[in-house]
Structure formats: C-alpha cells, structure tokens
Amino acid sequence: MSRAHTTEEAAMTERLRVHVDPDKCQGHARCKALAPELFELDEYGNAREAGDGTVPPGLEDKAWLAKSNCPEIAIDVIEE
Image (cartoon, rainbow, N blue to C red; front, side, top):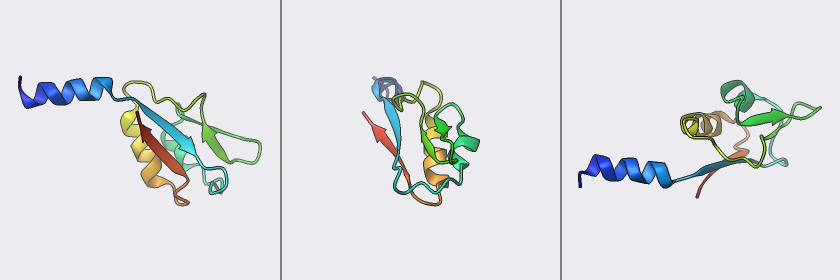
C-alpha cells in the first residue's frame, strides 16, 4: 500500500467539528466571512457554529482557515 493511499484513507475517516467559545468571541465575524457554511451570527454579531459544528467533506480547509484568522482565538477545530 502506498503512503498516498494511506493518507487518503485517513482523510476519509477523520471527521472535523468547529466550536466557537462564546466567552472569547468579540464579533469580528471573520469566520463567517471566510466560511459562511460553517458559522452563524447571533443578533449581536457574535459567531457560533452552524448546526452541531460538523464540517462537511470538502470544507476542512475553510474550518482551519477560520480558526487561523480569528483574532480572539475563539475557534477550535476538533478532530474526531
């Protein structure tokens, strides 16, 4: 089995979830701008994860991008 095949299998079985810490979020909304499929804003402009936070296949890069662009370090990407 090639290493590339092993990496592909790992990527297919790994699931990601996003979580926004409501105590840290200050409403910059960069996450929503970068990954609107993964985040929602409340009436005050603070973010929360859409649904249960599960990242659909193909949106993994957007989850990591949102995390890395949060100025308050309020977003966690959880690998399951």
